[in-house]
Image (cartoon, rainbow, N blue to C red; front, top):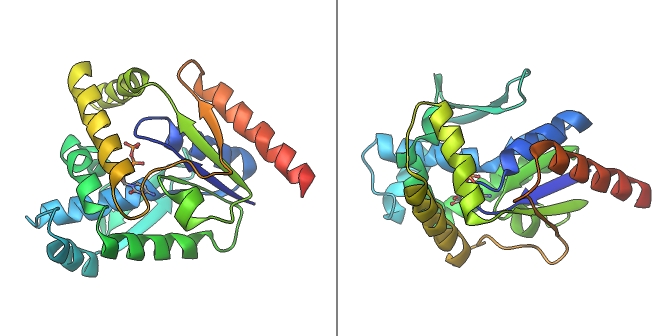
Length: 224
Ligand code: CDP
Protein backbone atom coordinates (compact mmCIF):
# COMPACT_ATOMS: atom_id res chain seq x y z
CA UNK A 1 0.00 0.00 0.00
CA UNK A 2 0.94 3.61 -0.49
CA UNK A 3 -0.05 6.06 2.24
CA UNK A 4 0.08 9.83 1.71
CA UNK A 5 0.01 12.24 4.65
CA UNK A 6 -0.25 15.95 3.91
CA UNK A 7 -0.98 19.04 5.95
CA UNK A 8 0.28 22.43 7.10
CA UNK A 9 3.34 23.16 9.25
CA UNK A 10 3.35 21.54 12.66
CA UNK A 11 0.21 19.44 12.17
CA UNK A 12 2.17 16.40 13.38
CA UNK A 13 2.73 14.81 9.98
CA UNK A 14 6.24 13.51 10.51
CA UNK A 15 5.60 12.10 13.99
CA UNK A 16 2.42 10.37 12.86
CA UNK A 17 3.83 9.18 9.51
CA UNK A 18 6.94 7.75 11.19
CA UNK A 19 4.91 5.83 13.78
CA UNK A 20 2.40 4.55 11.24
CA UNK A 21 5.27 3.33 9.04
CA UNK A 22 6.92 1.62 12.02
CA UNK A 23 3.61 -0.04 12.96
CA UNK A 24 3.17 -1.40 9.45
CA UNK A 25 6.84 -2.19 8.75
CA UNK A 26 6.73 0.26 5.82
CA UNK A 27 9.34 2.67 4.51
CA UNK A 28 8.90 6.23 5.81
CA UNK A 29 9.89 9.19 3.66
CA UNK A 30 9.95 12.72 5.05
CA UNK A 31 9.72 14.87 1.91
CA UNK A 32 9.94 18.09 3.97
CA UNK A 33 13.43 16.97 5.01
CA UNK A 34 14.42 16.88 1.33
CA UNK A 35 13.31 20.49 0.74
CA UNK A 36 14.95 21.49 4.01
CA UNK A 37 18.23 19.84 2.97
CA UNK A 38 18.26 21.78 -0.29
CA UNK A 39 17.50 24.99 1.62
CA UNK A 40 20.39 24.28 4.00
CA UNK A 41 22.67 23.74 0.98
CA UNK A 42 21.49 27.01 -0.64
CA UNK A 43 22.11 29.01 2.56
CA UNK A 44 25.45 27.32 3.31
CA UNK A 45 26.71 28.52 -0.05
CA UNK A 46 25.44 32.05 0.46
CA UNK A 47 22.96 31.72 -2.43
CA UNK A 48 19.65 33.58 -2.67
CA UNK A 49 16.60 31.35 -1.94
CA UNK A 50 14.41 33.63 -4.09
CA UNK A 51 16.62 33.39 -7.18
CA UNK A 52 15.65 30.31 -9.18
CA UNK A 53 18.90 30.21 -11.16
CA UNK A 54 20.98 30.23 -7.97
CA UNK A 55 18.75 27.61 -6.34
CA UNK A 56 19.04 25.51 -9.48
CA UNK A 57 22.82 25.60 -9.26
CA UNK A 58 22.56 24.34 -5.66
CA UNK A 59 20.26 21.58 -6.88
CA UNK A 60 22.90 20.50 -9.40
CA UNK A 61 25.49 20.01 -6.65
CA UNK A 62 23.12 18.52 -4.07
CA UNK A 63 24.47 15.17 -2.93
CA UNK A 64 21.45 14.22 -0.81
CA UNK A 65 20.98 10.93 1.00
CA UNK A 66 18.22 9.88 3.40
CA UNK A 67 18.83 7.05 5.79
CA UNK A 68 16.26 5.57 8.14
CA UNK A 69 17.52 5.38 11.73
CA UNK A 70 16.49 1.94 12.94
CA UNK A 71 15.68 3.02 16.51
CA UNK A 72 13.29 5.94 15.99
CA UNK A 73 12.50 5.47 12.34
CA UNK A 74 13.37 9.12 11.68
CA UNK A 75 14.96 10.04 8.37
CA UNK A 76 18.62 10.95 8.93
CA UNK A 77 19.75 13.45 6.33
CA UNK A 78 23.21 13.63 4.74
CA UNK A 79 24.89 15.87 2.20
CA UNK A 80 27.72 13.69 1.02
CA UNK A 81 29.45 12.52 4.20
CA UNK A 82 28.09 15.40 6.34
CA UNK A 83 25.07 14.65 8.51
CA UNK A 84 22.65 17.61 8.65
CA UNK A 85 19.66 15.97 10.42
CA UNK A 86 19.67 18.56 13.23
CA UNK A 87 20.71 21.57 11.16
CA UNK A 88 17.74 21.35 8.78
CA UNK A 89 15.37 22.10 11.70
CA UNK A 90 17.06 25.44 12.48
CA UNK A 91 14.77 28.50 12.28
CA UNK A 92 16.85 29.96 9.42
CA UNK A 93 16.08 26.92 7.28
CA UNK A 94 12.37 27.00 8.26
CA UNK A 95 12.17 30.65 7.26
CA UNK A 96 13.60 30.09 3.77
CA UNK A 97 12.29 26.66 2.84
CA UNK A 98 9.00 27.87 1.33
CA UNK A 99 10.85 30.17 -1.08
CA UNK A 100 13.27 27.43 -2.14
CA UNK A 101 10.53 24.86 -2.61
CA UNK A 102 8.32 27.11 -4.72
CA UNK A 103 10.59 27.02 -7.81
CA UNK A 104 9.50 24.86 -10.75
CA UNK A 105 12.92 23.25 -11.22
CA UNK A 106 12.99 22.30 -7.53
CA UNK A 107 9.54 20.76 -7.60
CA UNK A 108 10.29 18.80 -10.76
CA UNK A 109 13.51 17.38 -9.35
CA UNK A 110 12.11 16.54 -5.89
CA UNK A 111 8.81 15.11 -7.08
CA UNK A 112 10.77 12.95 -9.57
CA UNK A 113 12.99 11.61 -6.79
CA UNK A 114 10.00 11.02 -4.51
CA UNK A 115 8.03 9.16 -7.16
CA UNK A 116 11.04 6.88 -7.61
CA UNK A 117 11.22 6.24 -3.85
CA UNK A 118 7.49 5.40 -3.75
CA UNK A 119 7.33 3.12 -6.73
CA UNK A 120 7.73 -0.17 -4.88
CA UNK A 121 4.86 0.58 -2.49
CA UNK A 122 4.67 -0.22 1.23
CA UNK A 123 5.54 3.36 1.88
CA UNK A 124 4.29 6.21 4.07
CA UNK A 125 5.24 9.60 2.70
CA UNK A 126 4.48 12.96 4.29
CA UNK A 127 4.57 16.47 2.87
CA UNK A 128 2.38 19.06 1.20
CA UNK A 129 1.64 17.62 -2.25
CA UNK A 130 1.94 13.88 -1.72
CA UNK A 131 -1.73 13.03 -2.31
CA UNK A 132 -2.01 15.49 -5.19
CA UNK A 133 1.31 15.35 -7.09
CA UNK A 134 3.71 12.67 -5.81
CA UNK A 135 1.34 9.73 -5.15
CA UNK A 136 -2.02 10.68 -6.66
CA UNK A 137 -2.57 6.89 -6.82
CA UNK A 138 -2.06 6.42 -3.04
CA UNK A 139 -4.32 3.80 -1.43
CA UNK A 140 -4.96 6.06 1.54
CA UNK A 141 -4.66 9.84 1.73
CA UNK A 142 -4.73 11.65 5.04
CA UNK A 143 -4.82 15.41 5.53
CA UNK A 144 -3.70 16.32 9.05
CA UNK A 145 -4.69 19.67 10.46
CA UNK A 146 -4.80 21.51 13.79
CA UNK A 147 -5.42 25.08 14.94
CA UNK A 148 -2.46 27.40 14.32
CA UNK A 149 -2.13 28.03 18.10
CA UNK A 150 -1.83 24.32 18.80
CA UNK A 151 0.64 23.84 15.95
CA UNK A 152 2.78 26.72 17.25
CA UNK A 153 2.71 25.22 20.77
CA UNK A 154 3.93 21.88 19.43
CA UNK A 155 6.70 23.54 17.44
CA UNK A 156 7.72 25.58 20.52
CA UNK A 157 8.05 22.39 22.59
CA UNK A 158 10.10 20.74 19.83
CA UNK A 159 12.45 23.73 19.61
CA UNK A 160 12.76 24.02 23.42
CA UNK A 161 13.81 20.38 23.59
CA UNK A 162 16.71 21.38 21.33
CA UNK A 163 17.52 24.43 23.44
CA UNK A 164 15.98 27.00 21.06
CA UNK A 165 13.65 29.49 22.72
CA UNK A 166 11.13 31.21 20.43
CA UNK A 167 7.98 32.99 21.68
CA UNK A 168 4.57 31.60 20.86
CA UNK A 169 3.57 34.85 19.14
CA UNK A 170 6.60 34.70 16.87
CA UNK A 171 5.96 31.05 16.02
CA UNK A 172 2.29 31.70 15.22
CA UNK A 173 3.43 34.44 12.81
CA UNK A 174 6.13 32.27 11.21
CA UNK A 175 3.85 29.25 10.80
CA UNK A 176 0.97 31.33 9.40
CA UNK A 177 3.35 32.97 6.94
CA UNK A 178 4.75 29.61 5.80
CA UNK A 179 1.20 28.19 5.43
CA UNK A 180 0.30 31.22 3.32
CA UNK A 181 3.34 30.81 1.04
CA UNK A 182 2.90 27.02 0.75
CA UNK A 183 -0.80 27.18 -0.05
CA UNK A 184 -0.67 30.09 -2.50
CA UNK A 185 2.35 29.08 -4.59
CA UNK A 186 1.64 28.39 -8.25
CA UNK A 187 3.07 24.89 -8.55
CA UNK A 188 1.62 22.04 -6.47
CA UNK A 189 0.51 24.13 -3.51
CA UNK A 190 -0.46 22.69 -0.16
CA UNK A 191 -4.04 21.53 -0.54
CA UNK A 192 -6.24 18.67 0.54
CA UNK A 193 -6.69 16.07 -2.21
CA UNK A 194 -10.37 15.52 -3.08
CA UNK A 195 -10.18 11.93 -1.87
CA UNK A 196 -8.18 12.63 1.32
CA UNK A 197 -9.60 12.06 4.79
CA UNK A 198 -9.10 15.10 6.99
CA UNK A 199 -8.18 14.63 10.65
CA UNK A 200 -8.20 17.60 13.03
CA UNK A 201 -5.54 16.74 15.60
CA UNK A 202 -5.99 19.84 17.81
CA UNK A 203 -7.45 17.85 20.70
CA UNK A 204 -5.95 14.44 19.93
CA UNK A 205 -2.79 12.82 21.30
CA UNK A 206 -0.17 11.38 18.97
CA UNK A 207 -1.19 7.84 19.93
CA UNK A 208 -4.85 8.57 19.20
CA UNK A 209 -4.02 9.87 15.73
CA UNK A 210 -1.72 6.90 14.99
CA UNK A 211 -4.51 4.51 16.12
CA UNK A 212 -7.00 6.29 13.89
CA UNK A 213 -4.73 6.14 10.84
CA UNK A 214 -3.93 2.45 11.43
CA UNK A 215 -7.68 1.73 11.64
CA UNK A 216 -8.18 3.52 8.33
CA UNK A 217 -5.32 1.49 6.81
CA UNK A 218 -6.80 -1.84 7.89
CA UNK A 219 -10.25 -0.78 6.67
CA UNK A 220 -8.68 0.11 3.33
CA UNK A 221 -6.80 -3.20 3.19
CA UNK A 222 -10.07 -5.10 3.65
CA UNK A 223 -11.73 -3.19 0.84
CA UNK A 224 -9.06 -3.99 -1.80
O1 CDP B 1 7.60 19.91 9.68
P1 CDP B 1 7.03 21.14 9.04
O2 CDP B 1 5.57 21.05 8.89
O3 CDP B 1 7.52 22.39 9.63
O4 CDP B 1 7.58 21.23 7.58
P2 CDP B 1 8.24 20.16 6.64
O5 CDP B 1 7.28 19.04 6.39
O6 CDP B 1 9.59 19.83 7.14
O7 CDP B 1 8.34 20.99 5.28
C1 CDP B 1 9.12 22.15 5.19
C2 CDP B 1 8.73 22.95 3.96
O8 CDP B 1 9.07 22.20 2.79
C3 CDP B 1 7.27 23.32 3.79
O9 CDP B 1 6.93 24.50 4.48
C4 CDP B 1 7.14 23.46 2.27
O10 CDP B 1 7.56 24.75 1.86
C5 CDP B 1 8.15 22.46 1.74
N1 CDP B 1 7.54 21.20 1.31
C6 CDP B 1 6.94 21.15 0.07
O11 CDP B 1 6.88 22.15 -0.62
N2 CDP B 1 6.43 19.99 -0.40
C7 CDP B 1 6.50 18.86 0.32
N3 CDP B 1 6.03 17.72 -0.18
C8 CDP B 1 7.08 18.89 1.61
C9 CDP B 1 7.59 20.08 2.10
